[in-house]
Length: 250
Ligand SMILES: Nc1ncnc2c1ncn2[C@@H]1O[C@H](COP(=O)(O)OP(=O)(O)OP(=O)(O)O)[C@@H](O)[C@H]1O
Image 1 (spheres, protein in one colour):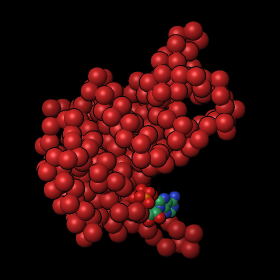
Image 2 (spheres, protein in one colour):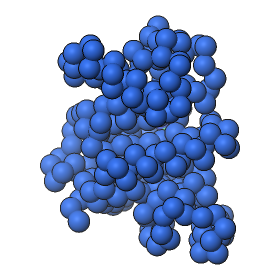
Image 3 (cartoon, protein in one colour):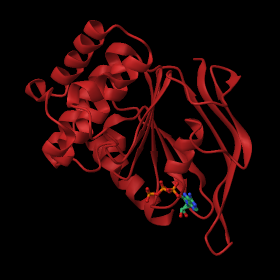
């Protein structure tokens, strides 16, 4: 399989307010194949968000290179979409206009982009909320809209930074299923950051376990459990337990 994303020898040092150096990422090498679903799991502060932000070109690396489709990736682009931890909706736009925002930037005609936005609104189970404004929605609903907005742009690669962290358990499971359905139907490449071992085991083809100070890759684990994965499957339970103990050491 071809590499979609290749991260070569990446390092990131931040300068703190009191001029200390924070070694956020060091010696990081990672490849994500076309159509692969990769989860990044690791303790708080190990550099997961920084890694995603560098891949999206929202942050500069201190050293190393990111390649997209074999070419050095140096500028944010529509083909690589990102969903953040916080909802990041435009408060002055209603839900449909928020979802259609990227399509407007891409100069899609209004009628077409509204139809696409409605399609994704239906997908997230919020068909009747197109005219609502973000302040009228719960946190979980806002995050679903942010996910619909990212998907509506039809990116080739989707970078997702703990996108379901703020959702209630029931909605989270629904969204996980929905994301897998979309990924299988559209064969996207997904790099997904999560704190949840269960979420990583449910979603990923491969799990990248990171350790902190400095953030680096500790282990890569292929998840060879057929989908749809059942949480009652003993292999699911065993992998979850193994990952939890690895995380304790991370
Ligand atoms: N803009 C910044 N300036 C200074 N230090 C930063 C900055 N952004 C991140 N850091 C530091 O870099 C390290 C990695 O942060 P990052 O947010 O990438 O971790 P994370 O694994 O995503 O954490 P969490 O799981 O809690 O979201 C942390 O020590 C953090 O304090």
